[in-house]
Amino acid sequence: MSKSLDPALAAGNRLALAGYDARHFLWEAREGVATLTLNRPTRKNPLTFESYAELRELFIRLKYATDVHAVVITGAGDNFCSGGDVHEIIGPLVDLPAPELLMFTRMTGEVVKALRACPQPVIAAVDGVCAGAGAIIAMASDLRLGTARSKTAFLFNRVGLAGCDMGACALLPRLIGQGRASELLFTGRSLGGEEAERWGFFNRLAAPDALLAEAQALARELVRGPTFANGMTKTMLHQEWSMGIDQAIEAEAQAQALCMATQDFKRAYEAFVAREKPVFRGD
Image 1 (tube, rainbow, N blue to C red):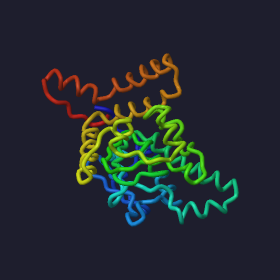
Image 2: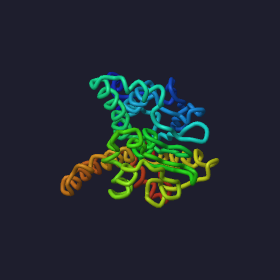
Image 3: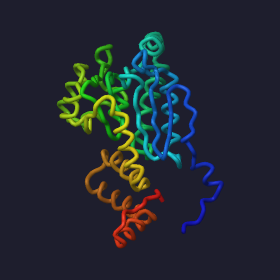
C-alpha cells in the first residue's frame, strides 16, 4: 500500500475537474469520461476569443485532474466546429496591430499545445462541418471518429492566410502524409468523411446518430485501462517526434520502467496468474 500523498503537495498538483463549471461550452463528466461540447449550433459552433482562452486554461488544468481520464470533444447539433467566429474574431483581427495579432495567434496555438500536453486521451467526434480551427482541434486530438457526411477543411488560404496555423504543417503531414497534407493546406478544399477515413484522418466512421455514443464508449474503454500508462503513451507519442531513434529507445526505456513501478502493472500480473481480468486503478 503506497503512502498517502502529502496534502501540501496534493494541493498544487491534484484537481477535481468532473464538476468543472464551463462558461463558453458544455462540460459533463461521468465515470472518468468528460464530454466537451462546443455549443453554438445555430452558427455551427464557432470559437470566440473567450472560448479559445477557456479551452487553453481547461486543458492546462487537466494535467492535474484526478477524476477525468479521457475527454470527448464534440459539437452541438449536426456540426463539429466552423472555426473562428467571422464576426467576433475575424472582423476584429483586421484592425489589430501586429503585437496583438501575435497575442491572438499564440493563444490559439497554446490551445493545441495544452491539448497535446494533457495526459488524457482526447477523442474528437466529428460530424458535419469541421473547418479552420475546428479542423485543427480534431487534428490535434489523439483519436478521431467521423461520419460519412462530415466535411473537414483547413480553410486558412481561403481567407488569405498561410496553412501553417496552430501546428497544421507539423501535425497534419504526420497523420495523412506530406503530399495529402500539402493538398489540403494549399487548396483549402473539404475532405469528405469516407475519404478522410481512407486517408487515415479518421480512425473510423459512425452513423451520425451513433457517433457520440461510440466516441464515449471508446473513451470508457480507455478509462478502464491503465490510465497512468495511457498518459505515458500519449507523452511519448508526442515527444518522440523530435527524437532520433536512439533517444526514443532510451526515453521509452525510462517511461516503461516508471510504468513497471505502478500498482497497475502488479495487478495485471496477479490477474494473469489467477486467470482473471485485471481491474486497473491508474496508480
